[in-house]
Length: 447
Ligand SMILES: [Zn+2]
Image (cartoon, rainbow, N blue to C red; front, side):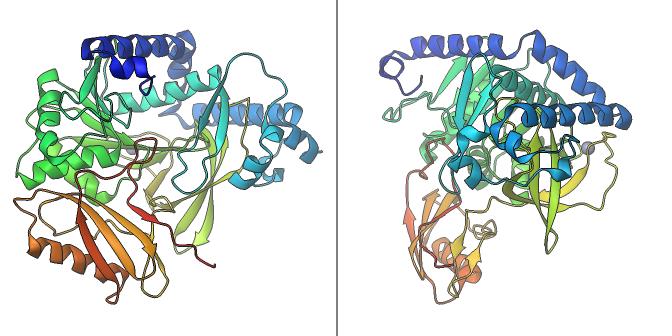
């Protein structure tokens, strides 16, 4: 809707009205009785291992039976009817992309909702869901929002890449309101340095209790506060982040500058795994959302292979995500919930640069450390031995000396012989979904 002419050409009050009505319709569709019942059910799982086990067994068996009966790929592959997960083959994105129809249930009626993975690591993959699937997803999201302290009536800020403000609008306001949900939606696409104070003021004036944001968007605001030695002047319950990886450095920065806890959520459009922070900062595998297997790939890393419980239309069983976690030694969280704990989620593979020896360098979070006046960065590499750093800066603080520190930090990670150039930009380019990639490397490797 937001990219349509009628929305973009409307005056702002009409845009607020259109946006609010659209949100209301979505709310009615997603948050009916079914979501309430499921939310109530899954809340019973949180602190009781035996209730959880029985819920999970039921869900898993349902998925395996439905798939074997109705999905062509599994009808062909699974001759045994013991419904033992280990008998099912591990599948990957490639198989689903090449044989999409083979993974669709033949037992379907009603609306099909198609969506694509964001494709930051390659070609997007189209995933299809039915309305039940959309509603079930919302129940899990709602439970996590409760963990973050959300209560009915709370006001929220939403900075998650929606194109609510037309891209060619150069003057504020850079936000719109969803009245019925009590949400101020702020644009991720207009966050140039001169606008950031207005973003903070808008959230404070609205009286926001919880911020839901892409990490890159909210970190841009935290860096602005840090550069100006300020703290968020309102009282927040929490910040809920998802859809991009959140480094521990950025989490610390957010918690310090916004004076509240960050509840990060890892999910993916394939819906085969979800991992969420509790109020004690631990990452819990949401084990009643899907079945997660962690495959040891060495050096402490484990690949997430997941089976979704909530999509009968396109059930994915033992699906390789290409995402990795590190295990935790902790068996029990102070929060008392029975979900397994992991130590951390590795940044998505795909955001990497190639160093002087041809090595892929994935961990880029440390590069901006110690550089003052830096609001955001993105690393671009299209040729060997040269990196262009696009930087959004506060020009009063970011001088030649700071630029040199940035260059030195980049060389420290990628190699002394690398050529590094810094380009000051108004804002960092985003993907079509409004996400920000840490690095974009377009070199073809002959691996
Ligand atoms: Zn916990």
